[in-house]
Length: 237
Ligand SMILES: Nc1ncnc2c1ncn2[C@@H]1O[C@H](COP(=O)(O)OP(=O)(O)O)[C@@H](O)[C@H]1O
Ligand SMILES: [Mg+2]
Image (cartoon, rainbow, N blue to C red; front, side, top):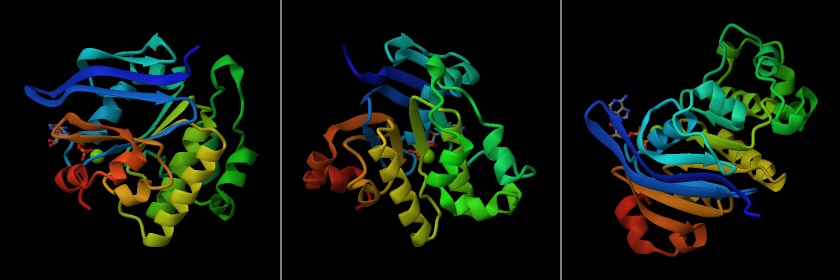
């Protein structure tokens, strides 16, 4: 039995006539954190949006636990177990923190109900005193925490986190890092888009480096960290 959760094979994605991804492939096993690294404009968000069904895949396939999900509508892909938290953190600004969480409740596949409101608050204690605050009144870091909490409430098989640390103060970046580490220790399967290799150290097991829509490195994070050439050519380190 394979424990592969997500398999992206050779996908091509276009914006109009402009090709953004060229035969991109990615494999994520259960419990792994895979970093999608690359400079601004490399294709990280495009990859996540294509997996989540927000962008159309022209050729190639995506499988979730061996089941084809290529180009299914986003709500069906979410229901199948993929939680996508986009860069722009889609929370409801006019709903309270607690309502934002409750409204995202979804049983996992096979009715697994691992994440409850109580457990999400335990994982994200920072949200507890903010329960009744409106989503729109949160700081960027608090919104990011809420977005991750919303994903958890959906009891996903895999989480796609698009640059969760982007634009946050260093203390919040650290908290997000600790949160991802805790999720990883619980066995959560995660794809993490990042520009910053440093943020992924100690968090990610594997890395795929994207440059101009192509995977230019695929391997363990340690291997990447030891590869000065790839780092210098494709990452801002
Ligand atoms: N809505 C869009 N329309 C046209 N081109 C886009 C759009 N969004 C992204 N692109 C282009 O696709 C490429 C990859 O972008 P993106 O996936 O957002 O990169 P990253 O997330 O790695 O910063 C870039 O060249 C970007 O300009
Ligand atoms: Mg992006």
